[in-house]
Image (tube, rainbow, N blue to C red; front, side, top):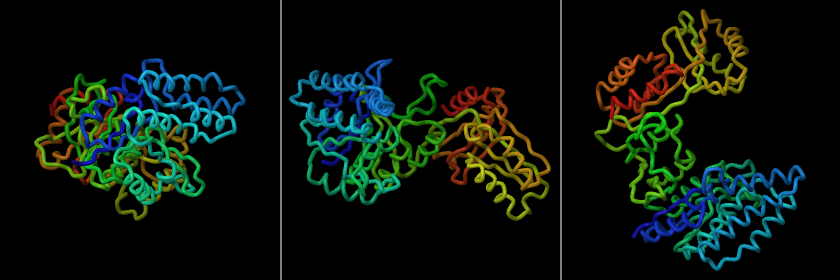
Length: 436
């Protein structure tokens, strides 16, 4: 007997049908002892997530617009859930308290968290598990930052009292004031990871509406292969380039505790999903995944004997700091250095930025390319397999894709390639085909 922590996302608790699937999954494995739930998500196209409805209620109240009708939609949704499951749970008192606090000007964090709160109460009753609130257990400091060690101690002490429990995701409270505080959207993943660490789980299962990670975007490549196992480091590289299934902050508590994460599909529980491990494992697989983004600008700076000028890169980075601009990559040569910056970061600042670079660095020339897409080829096996780069670049050449930039980290588990926006999809298909 071990301990599994299972987090179920909004689509997994959207209605009675989905909760019946959740119950079947939980009861299929006695090790699933601690269950984290999100607020109910969309039941169908055009439906609303409960959290969105709660935020809308708060916005209407702040603008002195009656929110009674909208709040009633939320109330009816939860009452219908209780009725469809045949539960002996009366939410009237809880809902009245939430409505009263809304009328009295509660915080946005408080009202947003009530979807998870009510969802956990209903799920606990349905499973016959204890309900454990995260207020007072997941702790934030006065600046809104998670207090990781204090949270771990509080969760471990409380959950030791409960053999099985359902826990609401997404929120905790201020250690100083007790006021409810929430994570960013998708933060229930973080709650699950924190619980997994606190109970020293053997596995953290994250149940959602996809069967784990795919090698690349299925909107670009038809039926890409699933990723069966991947390391935290590889996942971080892919998530950074847009391959998002799991909230990226959810990785760290589980990683620090050495708890593997299994991404699973509530609607296809027979699928094994993707297991995320702390260590990169030996495998015949060379490339784990391919991901990317469009719309970057490359600022290419040329200056003779640039490498001999002490402090020249500091001058360049100080320009970015003064303009509150972050960069993605900085490939360099003996006389050249380039900045790769998201177009969203520049947003009208480009001309001023170029002027300031010219004033501080006094380069011989500056070129700007604003139609660049970046894609990352990631794999733990890349550093052990000679010819990997050749296969990538040959595949691009054979598909008439011009490479605009190359950058490889010292870890040698990823290669970043810049191509024109128009070549982005072609490049991903070409590389995928070369390795699969």
